[in-house]
Image (cartoon, rainbow over all chains, first blue to last red; front, side, top):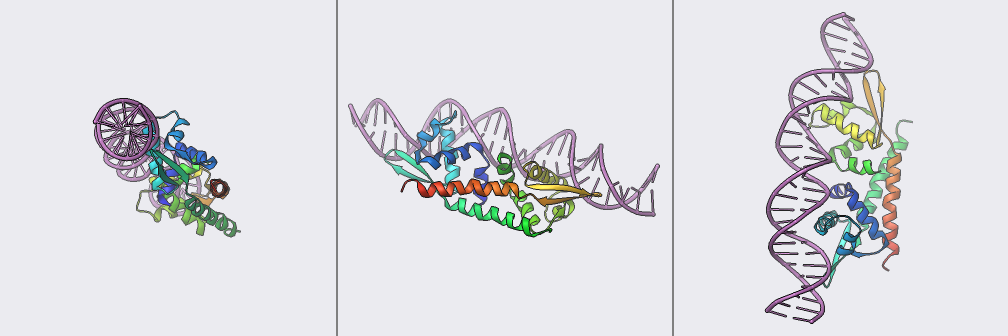
Length: 91
Length: 91
DNA sequence: TAAGTGTTTAAGTATTTACTTAAATAATAA
DNA sequence: TTATTATTTAAGTAAATACTTAAACACTTA
């Protein structure tokens, strides 16, 4: 999850993840949503991939990006631990 | 939540939050857990405060730090949205 | 008051990050 | 093969980040 926290700290990358909630998109389609060069987006996608927040699968010359929900599930568990502890302590 | 994501991207700050799950601690007690100067820890605490991940309350010359669970709750909701979407799309 | 303790602020610096443009790689189609 | 399109890699740079030490601030106690 270490890498996921780093990856999620950037607003552009969080926006990319939001886009992928609607449907899978190619790298090019994703870059159309931003005022930023394609290489920049490609680098952001690499970081999201390394953090296992997205999957990539090549279809011909296109690379489709998909949400990988496993780390999000881990994140829910991680955050819930703080909520629990916060309730039980210091009563 | 923007600030919270930034705050959570640093491993030292996540470790501080972990310490606070056990019990409230003063700035000095927190700094004892790290191989790092007190001013560094103080700066990390400032970032956690600004992100509303912790509360600070002064007791005499000591400043006690406490978990603030509200942003963690928001984080759970945020992450759950990705899990939901990931399940419903692309079936 | 002055001295001691706890904490934060200020100022400076090395490293990391997020971008850029140019070039390389990969697949498709003429 | 050559050209076109989609994407990534490489190289360089300005800005942000995480640390440091020194100084300031705040409270307690002799």
